[in-house]
Image 1 (cartoon, rainbow, N blue to C red):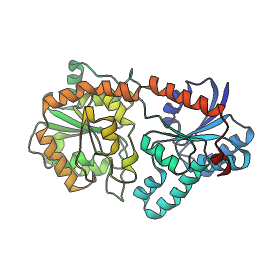
Image 2: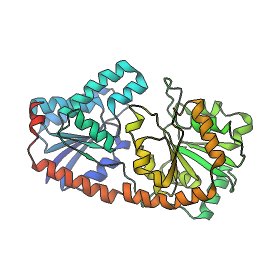
Image 3: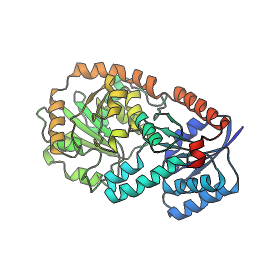
Image 4: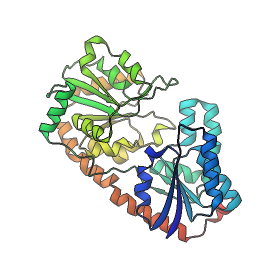
Amino acid sequence: MLDILCIVTGGAGDGRRARRLLGALDADVQYYDVDKSRPRRESSREIWQLLSAKQYDLVMQEGTGIAGGANLIRAARTRGQRYVVSSGDPIGGFFHVTRGPLFGRAFSLYERLLYRHCDAFIGWTPYLTGMAIKMGAPRGVTIEGAVEMETFVPYEADKIRALRANLGIPATDTVLGVVGSLQWNPRHAYCYGLELVEAAKYLSRSDVTMLIVGDGSGLGELQKRVPNDLAKRVVFTGRVDQQGVVDMLNVMDVGLITQTLDGLGSYRLTTKLPEYLATGLPVAMSPIPGFYDYASEAGWPLPPYHPASEQFHRGLATWIDGIDASDIAAKSARAREVAAARFDYEDLTQRFAVFINDLVQRQPAPEALTA
């Protein structure tokens, strides 16, 4: 039986995927969920104590947080501790886009060190896996974000009508929506949902409702931007639990997934995509590689502009004005099939188990030993 330590740098709420994947192994797994409410130095000290206490067959870090990553680099260099990193974001690209070039350069250096010292990288997209290998990861595999197909299910029409009525949404409206963390990014003057609020101002048709599900620092900003005459056409739910997410996805006719077309968004594949598709919800996505590789059969490409730009908002409104109910129905009919083929946990856990079992049975690659 393998002895594995799993460090979840995003906290317990981000650890469901790691627990599901590692559950496929014949392993004794110890989990450490970073508490984001505590100072980073305290988490870092506790992680080092765990790494110093004994030699694990493997350490898996879910996420790229520096409290865990810096200690893994140190443990690899001083104790030969083997580790893998699982991530859905480019580190340097994330900080470059969200915090600026200086932060981007600093965290790109950390990213290279993290990957050069690891045994393997587990990317949520093939684009991230390729990037990590180029930066020095000796091995890699793509394990996409997965969905619990038994939880995210399409509802019957009567239940959907009742949910819409509770929200004050007419049964005959076309509902476009987004689910996510509404954290305002001052650098980009954007958060999820902004595109729906702004596009509503340019619509010609009146049978459309925008549904924005989630909470965060941007919620108040979005609410302020809704003119009084559109108040009934833009519905905010605030934070909902997982069952509430399934309910709200069923209320929608089309789910929006927007990304910036840069060194961050072009490499990502949001965890919401599998959930949207599993509920039978077709998606409208920014034209990043992930759309064409994973969702084009059940969706439409959005305008190729930054989602905070007027060009994007006007283009989105034009597309909504022309959207066809029969096209929505056809894409919806394919959505769950695509989710099952691309994002079912059963298939992904098997791939993960084969990769990890092969990895731990082999000696580290020479590049990893000498990096």
